[in-house]
Length: 157
Image (cartoon, rainbow, N blue to C red; front, side):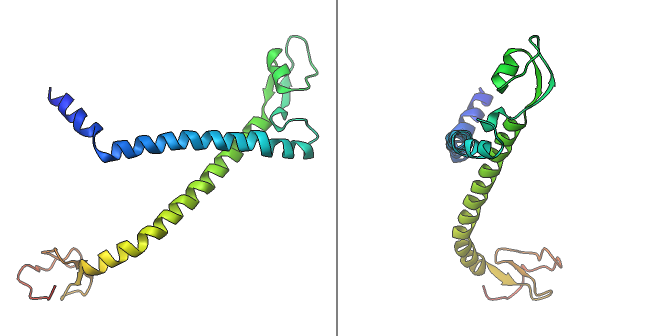
């Protein structure tokens, strides 16, 4: 019974709900990025590589039962050929790069929005240690840097 109570408390905490929403948004975002890479970027890059589709860039390592040649990765896989799938790897790398850049920009924007709020809060809740002159919390009873006792200190808060 105690475990079920703890599980219920864990599940209804705001962090779990926030994480679930983040995962759902991440899955939807991944679908959009995959479509961008496969449907828009890959064909353009495929034009420069003389292939009809960027996803069909591969190196044949060992021919399959029919011996090839293969004009697409699907044909090579259907013949059980062993291939090095360069195009699929490049698609995954481009997906990763786009997701990384977008997440970086989101985190950077979020941090920029949070900084002014945190700075004003930090200034109000900090004081100076009279012994080592480091910044410490106004609630501190002992300086974390010099370990001086601040309980009997007469510093104005």
